[in-house]
Length: 156
Image 1: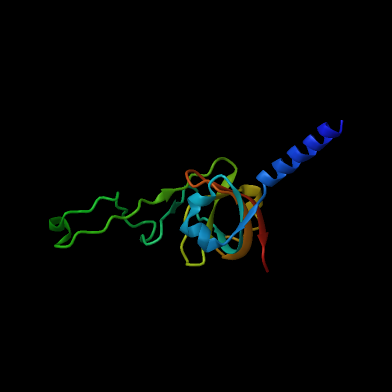
Image 2: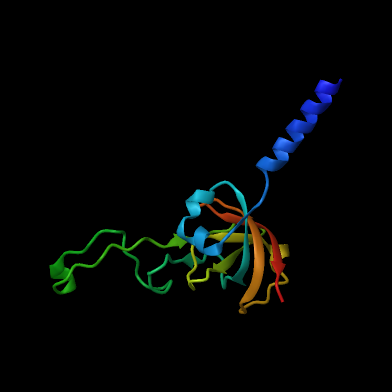
């Protein structure tokens, strides 16, 4: 009986440790998000605001505004651009949130937005539209699809 009890306690502790949250520096996550793929992580003191419309296009760092044309990563010949070839540009990411979710734009310390973050509509209601809010967010990192925010705490 003691062996069964200790086995259950050890397995429960192992399960809890495997699902633990990891507090990550926002700059570290911005530089290498695939390192945290599949993990639940916490970003502290980060600026967030609601996206203006569903299906928002998030542009990677170094790319112009969302309305600007985006290259497919192929350099253009010099005859087309007037003498100098253009550098390849990463394509923009299109965020299409699932039903009952909204896009949450997360602004990293360098002023850039990277990746798609979605939050439940009910959780997004307290976030004022059009205003930047400093918050601590907890989310499940998934660099291939959507980072789903599971908790948000506003910092006054």
